[in-house]
Each structure stands twice: as C-alpha cells, then as structure tokens.
Image (tube, rainbow, N blue to C red; front, side, top):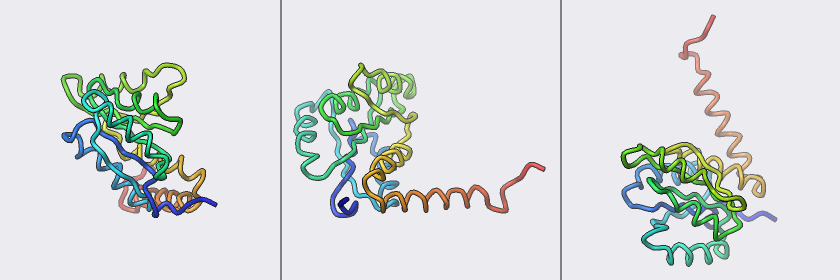
Length: 167
C-alpha cells in the first residue's frame, strides 16, 4: 500500500547556495499546495560534497522518493546527485552570472549516459515540483487526484470570461 504523502518528506529539494532560496522555495510551496511534504537543504556539490553524499545515503530510508536539485552557473549539483542515487533527479538551472542561467541549463542537461537528470527551464522550480508530483502520482493515487484538481483550477483561470477570445 502506498504511504501517505503528508506523513514524511517525499521530495528532497537541494540548492547549492542560500542566495537562490527565493527561487527554490517556489518548488516547496508548489509541493505543499499539492499536499506533498518536502525538505529543503542548502548543499553544494563543490563546497560540501561530503554532506551531499551523506544526505543522499540517508534520504531514501527517511522516505525521499524524488530529488529536485537547483544550481546556477556550473550547476553540478543535479549531476552529483544523479551519480549517487537511482531515484529520479530533476534539475533546475538557476539564472545567475553573466550568462543568466544559460550556462547552468547546459551543465544540467549535458549528463553522461546512465546518469540521467530530467531538466526544467531556467528558474523553473514550480515545474520541477509539478514533475516530482507526477512521478510520485505513479505510486500515490491521492497525489493524482490533487494534480487533476490543480489542472482543472488552472484551466478555469485560463478560460475565465474576462479573457479575450478570438472570434
């Protein structure tokens, strides 16, 4: 039987820098709106690689089923996570530096064969949360229901009478 997605964190959200929390917290907020618990940690692939490894080794035992890894510039965090787990990893390249996130996007999508990272757009923390929810919905039917309700609400907002229509 699938576990209750509110009883323990199912998604581990990692970011390489506390400076990026403003963008990264959107993933946690989106998951929370879908009734999915998560945990958010600042762990750097470059500055604290031992802490990343330690976290990844213990996370599945605590219930983590999906990782979201957010990083800018060289953006090695998602790849470092994917290299150490068989769980799904969603990379969020963050806009920073002189290339406004293009470097992070390329770093995140250019993984070697066998080390996959699903990647969303630059600063796409909300979409990363939705992707994590869709992955979790394969095992947790109550998440499927929440996703369906959220999609219907989005459609209603888009299709409201005050939206201009082509005639």
